[in-house]
Length: 115
Length: 114
Image (tube, rainbow over all chains, first blue to last red):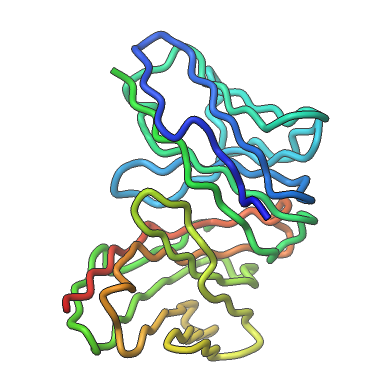
């Protein structure tokens, strides 16, 4: 069974460009969570999605950031007009049923570097 | 109230020693407390978890101790090995959490010297 797949592993963007991060959940999982990890910090929740729906975006910055999880294809985290402060590791996790206390399965992350 | 505070930030232990990492929380509605282990270049992976109806849970060399009245929980790694060198995150969630969302501590970088 393939785990949670994220790509690209590394992404370099110049200030003002757009970054698109992709996440394919584990087979059979329809709940996806995005977390951001800044250097020397823990994982900060950004957004929780089910197929075609955003359930909780309370951790998402109000501007420049958006996420989607279409009926077909991977979940996408999109960052428009990137700034240096967006440089971080972005992790996607999935769970099968979305119940509180359910195990989260994480991908290996996308390291975004903004020049 | 949604924060989970973790200490120490880094820890160095000799092979065979005991590693202890502590976490504290404020939100009494938290009812699920997992620990995740992260190796460099990898995503976090669930190590062990506890619910507040028990005070201790042991899986192999890993033990969670839970003190509900003090709102603290800790991870103990017995007979620490160099292969345990990783970053450890405590986390918490409530039954009211959206989905399986977790609130994580800041992480502890553990180094086990041979």
